[in-house]
Length: 204
Image (tube, rainbow, N blue to C red; front, side, top):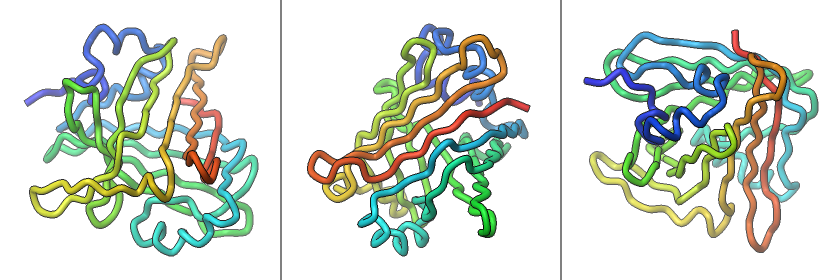
């Protein structure tokens, strides 16, 4: 049993230390523990291409997409670990004006530490494999493909042909030891940008 943080396992000790201190604190929760944390902030923008509205029913079913758009959207994100498994769980709570709170829930597990890969799981066994790197203090995720988990099998799904690839970054804010920014974008070589959101957060 290990209580080493998930991203320290995936990155290795040297690259883990290259992350900004606020990013290490953010992801310092220990697998197979009762560690938990909340961060709060505002999303500067939550956006999707107009045609992507056609994907929202499926996105809601799998819990994989944020269906609304907006600016200056308050958000809190609750992170936790569980004693019974090695996953990292989070619940992103978006407060869009005039709407009920939207929850985007997922959990992340180590997929292949040697390849620096994790999987982020949403509903019905749908997962996104992500390669993780430490770059100039930032934690960077690059989409390397979707999988569908059926029992012990993980079958590749070519969803990138429709949606494109995701890219996520979390960076320390210079001069503010308790703050970080994050941005996520999904882009397609033919359709252009499909989804994006970005914001600034503070650790409790």
